[in-house]
Length: 509
Ligand code: XMP
Image (tube, rainbow, N blue to C red; front, side, top):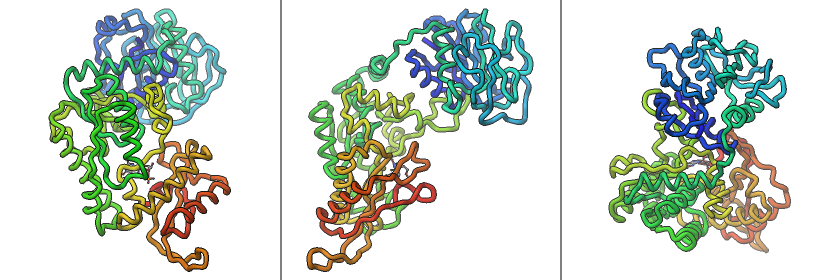
């Protein structure tokens, strides 16, 4: 095991992720974990994470000083280096100015940490204080524009430090530095795979849940689907999933989810048809935020009612991923424990006295996909495009009626079908149809028509924060357009949304 001591950096989980990329097993520990505990756990190397504080601050998190006497290699990153300076006899200077952003690293002596790397590398810094005097036994191995101690080492004791952040994407070859530490310095085994993650997660879930019951709201999206499959593998019949049909789902969505989980996975799945209630409450409402609020509130109400009718449970399962973890972390207590109470369930865990179980909370999206695939979920689920909680409710502009929803469903199904057939579905972030309550004149055969408009929204994005409209080949767009106007009654015109985000959002409402 590699121990990552967490000093409250937002990047601690990213360090853990990079270690997994090197196929090495690691565990995140609270910064104050006693050295004896680490020894008992068979730790072969320790990484000290970054952190937002100054080592001199009153509330600064400090490790057990004994960790430096365990005889195992230590790698300090950013705040971790300052801790090494502080505890091993160096000097750290308080600094008002932060060194933040890209910089250049020049490697003076590669040693084991920088072995095999080019002499000059782009690095990413984010620190205030810095080391001004090396602790005895240490030498500088790399310098940056702002620091003569960007890389330091005491190869005898196998202590290494880097002032910048090797774990972030912007640092060139950062993963190689981490791998060098794990493999060349610690001699860690590179045999940790997705299968091992699943085995560990299954054991953890069983230990935590015991004989209790877990309830999970299944949306059909990637995260809740993988969480369901993982929980089911661990506890089988102790898991009950609830799928709420809010009447705002895509064509055949409910049947698809039922077929997949009830029939193939034999998961105890309860489907609640609340479509009438949702549509009743949404009747005549056209303001987007009001629609969202009604949908959200009704969801929590229906979900809670169905959970009560199922009978007691002790746990609420959720597909929370690491990126859902709140950005600002508290240094008191375990920083990673501050998780956003997930979108849809409101204050339900408190009201129903349910404990949360979130088996994916340390993973990133792509890792979740790997886990899903390894658990036997089909590609259509694992690589599914995101779908908003309020569903088609925010894709029918203005007030929602069953007729408008029916038109949108058919048009959207045509779009998805052609996107799948051409393979573009897998290449874009999202592709969907939007219903515009605008009537325009058309001609069909000899008849004049006066029908609605469908807009196609197809975007590329990395994280949904920014997006650009996807340049789908014209022949595919043509096919989608002609199929929609031919196959979907009530639509005589199809338009393409060519707005980027910003200033437009991905969804229309
Ligand atoms: P916007 O429209 O803000 O969307 O550019 C960004 C991403 O978030 C999705 N989205 C939602 N997801 N509940 C969700 O779970 C919501 O209320 C919601 N609204 C938007 C949207 O599909 C896009 O991927």
